[in-house]
Every structure is written in structure tokens, then in C-alpha cells.
Length: 305
Length: 303
Image 1 (tube, rainbow over the protein chains, first blue to last red):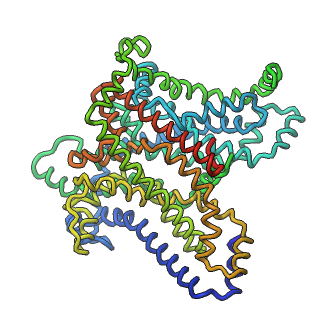
Image 2 (image 1 turned 90 degrees about the vertical axis):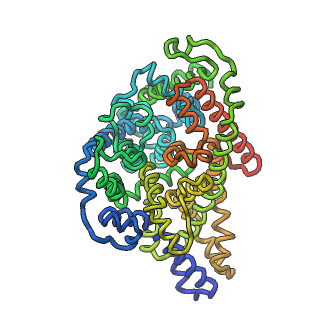
Image 3 (image 1 turned 90 degrees about the horizontal axis):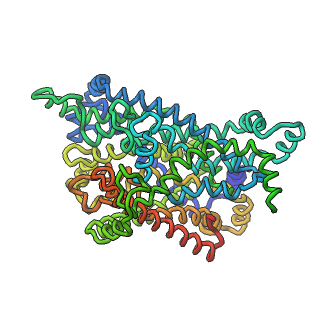
């Protein structure tokens, strides 16, 4: 709306010279920033299909050269990478469902003005945003009290309540569900639970999508909890495997000798570029289609609840 | 309100409490119980004796940290990285949002936004892998481009003096677009009549930015600034830890990486918990102070 009015006005009033210079600078800088944002990702893509020697010499900057799929062929043989991929898909699906199941109902309850003890519960759920026990006490509780270390559940359950998601969803419920709706449902004899499941949830698909996408990206990209709480390599998620490949240079499952090792060393960077592409592909290709939900979420969160 | 009526209200809405139950159980077990577990910072924690059964140690572990040579080192590194990060990553998203707000070519604007948001979704591991590969003195693309321009960079990852700059400017690349969304949202709420009135008065675009856009962003700026101040000693562990190496450790060992190594690599649980508690308390106190200060002078606060 506002953009349209301004644009129309600009057509009526001739732009001053200062304004034209201003526009020129804005669009020029924006074009430059767009290139800066995209180039590193583009470079990874072309480096992953070029001759590694040319890449190392700095001869591959704009277009791929001596294209080959050797790097990807080697990646196919890396069982730990695909195992990590499978684990991550599992953790992401389960973790996202759990996050929706625990956070959304809390957000709804806290959004209700007639909730007795609302102040206490709000404090209870938001205080951990600002203070926590810290890494070591949390580790000791999970390890010694709950014996959850190195299990599937430690990846999806203990850290599933996210105060920020609750704040955003609560704001959504407060601003988008009219109080009269609940009054009317109550008169018809509808209880809280039935109202939540049959009226609130179907009206709240937008916020469910926002939280689900945030949770999924968070699970897909995280390595910290896995590094702290997992021991068995077969349970490692993709990002932990990626850390071993990218940061610790662990390419082969077994030690190699002589020419095989030299060949692998030559290809090391090629394999790394390819691994980056393979591990980031799902999110990067999905993102442009779902980006409106991410933006929506941040904007809901920006409203003061 | 008096007691009985609260109980009556609570009883009528029992369903709402049931909806909160799963999250409450999870929070009590995995978030509030560790807050109680923090008392091991004041004890000689032995796993066999349990948290309560271990004997008291008083402030022994806090004093050990304050007196160790790592204290000044970790605090300094944390503060340098943190303040540098705030100084750079706080204003840049605002400038980006102001720019974005000036673009009327819809398709270009959309493309600009999608491209600048995209790096936000790269994982920390991949980001650090990219940084290390791009900066490699033998095969990295950045030293190559620099040498084309006649600049010799040397081994940047092995240069302790370059660590904070590498950390901060890659943060900018990854998150500046995303961090601007809040400000773009705030700008989209500006009443178009303000712009029209300014135009009638002959204001240029630049004058409109100064007189309308920037004042409109002040409340958002203050809220985000308070939040940032609440984590001054809370520099993210994940990225620093992955970028650390033996050559840059003198400027890359921060509180959180040090306490991780002490706690989980050398099993000094109580010592590590004491460092963590000290860190959290300082952050919390700074948050409260900045919040109170802001409430006094600007009427904007978190709570």
C-alpha cells in the first residue's frame, strides 16, 4: 500500500538531482552486496566440479574448468556421510514434531488473559532466556540423573522447549484470535482442549509453519549437542560428520598408504566442496519457496506482546 | 484477587494447564534441575557422591579461576570479540534496512533480500569450513584474489591478531541480511502520510531518511541493543571453537571454549561449573542494568 502511494507521487513530482544520485548509490551498493552475498556460495559450487589443481592455483574464479564429478563420486562411497544424513533426517523429523507438540500449546495457554497464575507461568517459561545452569551442570544432570548421554532421545527431547518460539507463537495467538471466538465457543459448551484442537490449531497454520521451519533448520544445522552428548559414531548427525571432514580433515574411514593417500590428499578440497554442497542442498533449495514464513515469524516476534 | 476465586478460575481452565504440562516437565528436568545443579560450583563434585552428597568447597573454584593466568586471557579475548561484534553487527543491519526501504524496483528488491538472507541458513560447521578453506594460504581463494590486487595476506587463520576480524566480518556476511528483517518490518509500519507531508515541504530522500526513518527505528534499536548487551560475555561457543587452532589460540580462547575444555575434556566439573556460573551471573547483571538504564532514559525496556 504505502509503496504504491509513494511511487505514484514520485511519478508526478520530477526527481531532483540529489534524489537521482541517491537512487544511483542505493542501487549500486545493493547490487554489489548481492554479488558479495552470493559469490562465496557460487564459488563452492563451481569448485566442487572443477579440477582441484586449477582451483588451488586460483584459476577457477568465475566458471568451472575441466569439469568432472570425481568429488561427488568419492562422496558416494563415504558411508559415514550418508549415515549422518540419515541420522539428521531422523533427528530433524522427530525433533520438529516434538518442538511443535510442546511449545505451541504453552504459547496458547499463556496467550489467554483468563489463565490464573499467568504471570508466574510466563516467568517460568521465559526466565531461561536470560539465565541458565550452564553446560556442565546440564551435562551432569543428563548423564548421571537421566542416563541419556549417547541415546537417540538426547538429540530430540531435553532442549525442545524454546522460550523464543513460545514468545513468537504467544504473540501470534494474542493478535490473531479474537476473544469473542472463545466466548462464543464456551456458550456452545466447548471446553478448552476441544477449542484448542478444533478451532485454534486449524486457524493457526501460519504460525505452525513458522515454528516447524525454524525448528527443522535448527536441527539440521546443529552440531553442538551432538558433540557434547553423543559418543557412538553411528549415531552422529550430518553436521558432526561434516565437522570431522571439514575441520579435522578426516576423509577416509581407514588409514591409507602411499599413492592412495596422496591421491586422496590431492582431492581433499574437492571432496570438502562437494560435501558442503551435498549437506546444504536441502535447505538452500527449499529456502526461496518458504522464505515468506521465516520473515513472517521474525515480524510477529517483533510485535510487542 | 482473593484465593478461592483464583482456584475457581484455575479449575474452570484445567485444560490450559494440561496443555502446558509436557513443556513444564521437560523444563523442570532439563533446564531448572541444572540450575539447581549449579551448586557443584561450590562443592568438590564427585560423580559417585552425587550433587548433594559431595562436600562443600566454598569459593575455592571461583578463586582458582580468578587467580589463574587464563582468567585475564579468556576475559580479554571474550570482551574483544564481543564488543567488536556489537560495534559492527549492530549498526550494519540498520543501514541495510534503510537502503532496502528506498528500493522501489520490486523484483530487484526481492532478489536483493533473498540473496542477503540466504547465508543465514548455512550451518556453523559449513561456515567455518568455508572460512578455513577460503583463507588457506596455499589453496584459498581469498589470498589468491588479494595477491591479484598486490596484497600479501600470509596465513590468516594462523595469525592471532587477525582472529577477531575474521570472526566478526564473517558474522556480518552471514547474518547482516537476516538481522535487518526486524528493522524492515518496523519501517513498513511508517505512516505514508509522513513521507507525503515531507515531500510537500520539499524534503529530499536523504532528508526523509534522517527525519522520518531513523527516528522510527529507535524503539527497535533499543530493544535489540538491550538483548545484545545481555550476552556480552556470551560469545557463541560454536563458531569460535571450530575456528581455533594452535597458532591463534592466544586470542581465540574465550570463556565458553575454556570451560568446555576444563569441564568435559579434563573432567574438572566443579571448576568448569564455577566459570560458567560466573559468566552467566555477569551476563544477567549487565542485562538488568542496561534494561533499568534504558527504562529510565527512554521508556523502552524488555521487562
